[in-house]
Amino acid sequence: MRLSRYFLPTLKEAPSDAQIVSHQLMLRAGLIRQEAAGIYAWLPLGLRVLRKIEQIVREEQVKAGAVELLMPTLQLADLWRESGRYDAYGPEMLRITDRHERELLYGPTNEEMITDIFRAYVKSYKALPLNLFHIQWKFRDERRPRFGVMRGREFLMKDAYSFDIDEASARKAYNRMFAAYLNTFARMGLKAVPMRADTGPIGGDLSHEFIVLAETGESEVFCDRKLVEMAAPGHDFSDEAVQAVFDERTALYAATEEMHDAARFEDQTAEGDRLSARGIEVGHIFYFGTKYSAAMKANVQGPDGKEAPVHMGSYGVGVSRLLGAIIEASHDSSGIIWPDAVAPFDVVVINLRANDEGVSTACEEAVHRLEAAGREVLYDDTDERPGGKFATADLIGVPWQLTIGPKGLADGVVELKRRATGEKFSLPLDEAISRLLG
Image 1: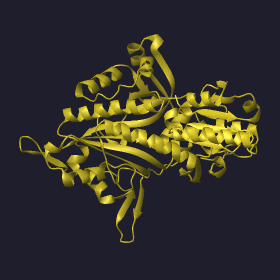
Image 2: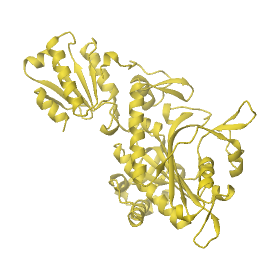
Image 3: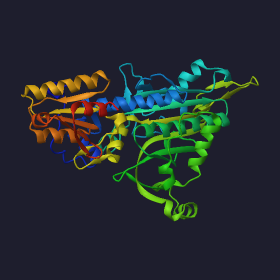
Image 4: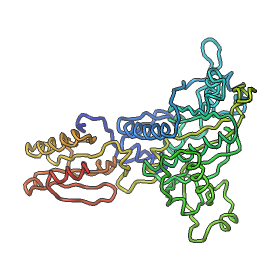
């Protein structure tokens, strides 16, 4: 992709109302544009990252046995009246009346709709267990939307819903999602710590938040340091394996500020392992039993021939929120540092003299060879001064920068820079490409 033909509206300074680093950098790097309070247009660079995060989330859900569908953004108010949540949810719900005087709402979550879909088709325990998920836009009318995509009104979310014959089976489904979430965040270069959480308006008696540690996080968290050091569990989703993952993590202390018990923290955690840090919630999972299925009569016939409401859980990941969380956890004074798996491009090729035929030929050769090998390349072929090109490359955070200029070519070398570390290597073009191709 030639930068001269791309749409990348960067800013030298962030707007004054951008309070946190991720919001500032997303605006400056041309990832998003605010259209209204808490509502953003996703510009080309931001959309590329959003789609990569979405795909990682999707792949890990499928590996854990979930099946994808797609539900609409608008829901019938009557479904929420069945569950008892329509009047209880509060002003965060955007309520709409259509031209036929039907009451609708812009979905903040989908427990009611997925229960309605399930009860229309599934009548026997033989169809269980079942986990259905989708990745869809949500709307919650926050009183004070702030912090960019971290607390916006419109957001992209992955929500999954499990259906099981009894509590024991439902808890196995919960454990599978628990493990799947650890795998998901690890693939994005994040260290996510599961912490026991309040169930809030979703309901139920078992819930965990997944918290990414970041110096600029929104809340204080407390945990055993060993939780941060644990590797992703991998893809053995047998009941025994996921129970072991759940037990290992939950045996160690971890709590948000709201759930923190200082005395228990000191009692359960060795002094050298006590970690107090800032954190950002990126995922939230719930087991709520028959709360929705009983109210909405989502029953199945059990092996004994009797009908009973299914046991359910729900599992959310803030897909759009993850961009902000990743930036909060990975940036420096020059801009964003994207982990390789979610970066908008793999390499930015920087042409230091666009009107020099030899330099342009070398750049185009590098772009062609890299793209032919499956790498995603942004080619800075603009007339911008070198300092401006380097500043833009650092700001947008592409993992590798390949710089080609007349002086280096005369000496038979190009410069390769790793954005995350700042390391620079002067080497022949062939060697630089070989290194980029791994």
